Length: 103
Image (cartoon, rainbow, N blue to C red; front, top):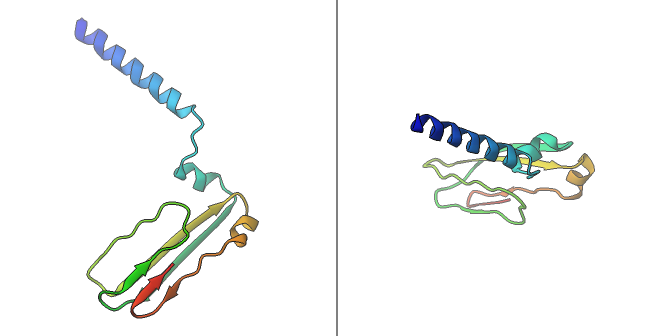
């Protein structure tokens, strides 16, 4: 009986914590992408020589870089904003040579 009461209490606390966290109004990256009206996806592939430099500048948001043993760089950029005009105000440029990739 005591274990049953503890289990019910833990479930109740977890449920209440989930409801509180969901109602806190936090704006996360996941709901930012679904709630925005302006959206731009860029998918590009570049050939780089071994040991090429990769540089990322002026990005406000999450950046993920993965390395592999290939000479191909795959660039995927997802930009979101309140509207399309905001996206057009600030552009993303990608410059690639055999020895460098600058975003």
